Length: 85
Image (tube, rainbow, N blue to C red):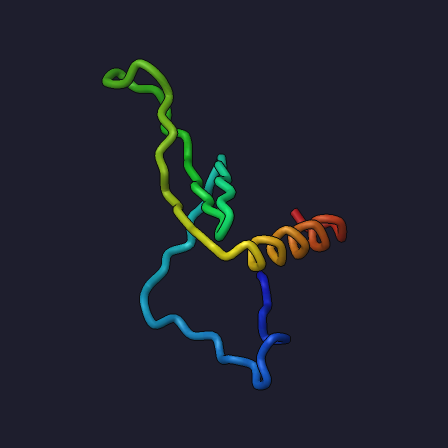
């Protein structure tokens, strides 16, 4: 988790004013724009009688400023290097 509390004089409390479900994704697409980064995540739906091919179903969309994306990358690298799964 990216923690931006170091930028603040007093740490802001974490709250959940609306229900945000946690989504497991099997694939990701990242779009880099000059002002922000957009992430689209999907799961794979299996082939059945009605579909001729597997389908990638989008289950997650997120956008963030470039600075937050850099913090996310740094945090992921650090935690995965320590043996995180």
